[in-house]
Image (tube, rainbow over all chains, first blue to last red; front, side, top):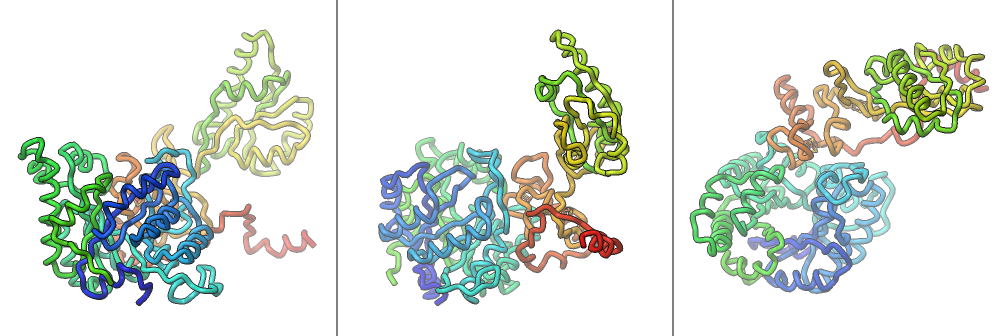
Length: 307
Length: 226
Ligand code: SF4
Ligand code: SF4
């Protein structure tokens, strides 16, 4: 075991992993975290705690992750390169580990221009690829990036992101290979809507032997409405929403759209369960946490293994 | 070249509001090429100031010179004996030129009349685009001649990130994704291998003021110090 995290155990024991997501509040409201967490507990193996997502200030991800952990859910501590330099990152990694966090997700982060402080200076001292390498070096060599020994190295299960749908498409599998070379243990992908492109990407990853070296968890997001689908298609950079999805949502009775969205998500999960090289999925039910129990039930992923 | 743009007139006017006599200094190199602080722009600024101050009933006396380069002692010395009687100097050079001028004439307040924006290129008449952040460790050889520090909004060394949008950067549709272009150019040159390996964390060398001494002058410099 590299970290002994629950996710690592689930994956190494060959269970189909099911992970979720929780965005910390825009304030110090612990109740808001508890409210979201109660829908996730027992229904997922691990919950991503986002780090100032879309560049909006929120409770820090390590702090929210600790609260979630106390509630009995394993967190995935997200860290973006936008907001801190290598000194702050390594310090936070040590502190997070000391407090019992065991998974980390290394990301570049959305550009600050999108958020509520567009005037901020973006840090980007290192990028997500280099962050992965740094966490691995801290874990496996017991050394800081600068080379000095660490007294009690942090042992994290190291995650990264991949977007199989962003241009240049043919480069995406190579970028995955770079993350594997940097030392990533698991990958959570951008929300998958275009299954064709996804199949091709996974196929290439299989051919290159990458899926033997990294656990890939495709991102699944149920569409709540036609508006959401249209918004994601046109407004969210790097998101590929095929017209068929929008048409399918438009084709059902207005009251049934959300249900259809969940149906599509469940069909995807069924396909991923059978797909070679895919050991689980990552459910991103954005601001829809209360639906997670129903989605998990309908996706046939309950009960979650207790290891 | 160094690219700059002239400050808004009201800002310049307010900087010299307490002065009766100012001396405006232009620069004939970069800022002249980018139409921000050459002889012509000096003339325009001086007339604007005179007209505005006359209108306020508070006339101002203005002296003027446009030097070959304000970032060079040789040319700065041309001002000796000409500017000592003035209340202030307005410099229209880049940030480096303004500082060097102030360093040579430390008894007189110096005010900037331009905002220095970038190291850039002449894209079209009057249009200049940034290309270099002077990081001190140039990687253009690896990236097919496209700067990831300047042209990628996140300054990534292992791009492109997941936000690339049909060849545009995630920040805006009109901004090309630098890494999309890097990939495209390296494919064309059959050099994709260049970016297959992980580029390690950068050794940032632009975090303290830098001095560059060309090898042939190292000895001379050391002698002068001693
Ligand atoms: S890598 Fe970019 S910022 Fe650095 S010296 Fe080269 S062009 Fe300038
Ligand atoms: S979209 Fe391209 S240019 Fe923009 S931040 Fe990402 S890699 Fe850099």
